[in-house]
Picture: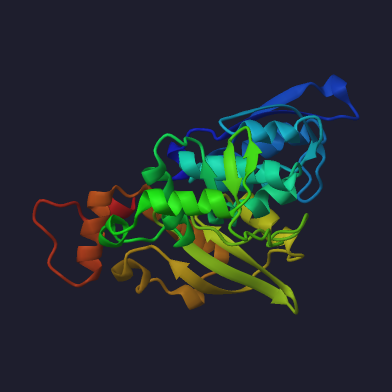
Length: 311
């Protein structure tokens, strides 16, 4: 799913605590790439939007995650809110219960904790309905297996016995979102306030880069994105964008026939970003035609020309 087609996960009314007379601005998260610079302009008019500081007061937060109201009435950073929303956007209903129950169990109420929790809450088991112990046991088994279980393997699981063993051998934590069994889950500090964000790919056609400029200065960038956000993400790692920024491609979801013909070593980050933006705009059927052309095959007589695709 691209950022352009997403529904907001969070909607925050932000203000300047030192200058309430500046009013409020309501921002939906995740912020679509094409709206990012405009959002920065709105915050700048209120003397807000620092790249790393939590200078925006969250007056009100709306979301499908009630636990996040703990972020109200405190300072927030625009990019932290956006990253958290991107992470939560991929959660299904059970993961939402895991996230919120674990936050209650661990007493998490700050942005750093919430971001880090998104990377480990899937290890916990949450029971929201005790009426179907077979389903509870199978869900617990899948959780212990990291969510990757074949249908045949799951069919051989005695769900009722597995659920009874879980309930009788472990002390659960009762929360408003279900009874949580942490299964030894540990909250790792993958993200620290003001620093670079952990890598996370959430776009259909993307390129993940590791950018660096000096000893200990590196960060991960996901393309395509707005130029302003890429420069701010580099800044979080202490890197000022210039042609001297080094990078390597960590991963790419672009079709191989397209990616293998991109002169990566001769393009700057912003040049690669424009290529990824172009790929994201191409309709799936046209992208297949482009792959066909780049593979050196004859163009289908009914298909668009190369120039039509890339315009």
